[in-house]
Image 1: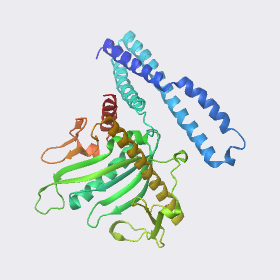
Image 2: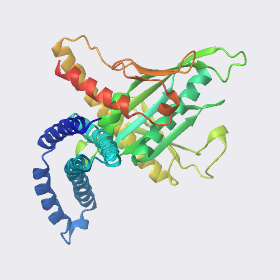
Image 3: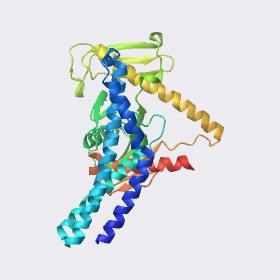
Image 4: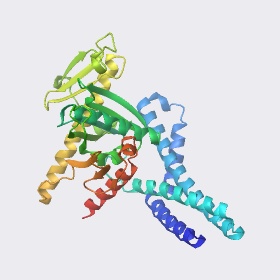
Length: 369
């Protein structure tokens, strides 16, 4: 790549970053940061802990966004200087360094551009993810466990905090279901494109005749509720059952009945949590999950009403959305976006950004039609 090529590529990145800055408006964010910093410095801030946490959380989130934009702008300017140096000194090593930084900068700007496409009502929220084994017996349960590890590894790669609320283990291998949260701004907006049915084709490790098996697992993604959501759940509407937490093989991991199962009587929704040590903590966590599912019901009902008014027949981009093929060839393909890679091992190890980015862009295009 010549210096002229590098400059043309950098010019494209500069324009893309400029468009992102227009959308995210760092000047307005800095003014808001100043106001929030003043509020956070108030001596009576922690008299209201819920408000204090909301103020400090929003301040941290905005500061992180502004710092990220400022850092990208600085890197664009520094790379231009590095290209000048490479051209003046005809230095091959400096040229190679500029190429590496150009590639890294492009990836980081692309990742931030995806954030500008997340403008849904709940896209900025944390994500509540549930994985369930579906058709395919023990292979499906094993596949569900593979997906659980895949998403937790994806979060780990990015430094996102996660908390597993509940895992229901299958008898022979794998899991029947698992529920966890990803605690990161825009986690819901990103992971919501993962919702649907995932399909695995492979030689079954559980078949002594070595036959090919197709199995399925479902992924549900919900926004985590916040104080402003006003999802009221009267005590009379729920039944709370307690039981002993258990791990793989049914082995007890707790000597008290601390795990909690909540049944929402009006809807029949059932949630459980056994991650925390105390019954009260597990009940609080299970209620948060129930609130998120009730919030999703309200959102889905509103969407159904809008689809009916628009007359689109209720078509959805959900359902079967990705195939993971391990035999007779190696491929992972998204059935909506047609994004595909030939390295399933990397995908199962959390390399999901390409699929998530393609999904976000695809969803945005569908909304614009």
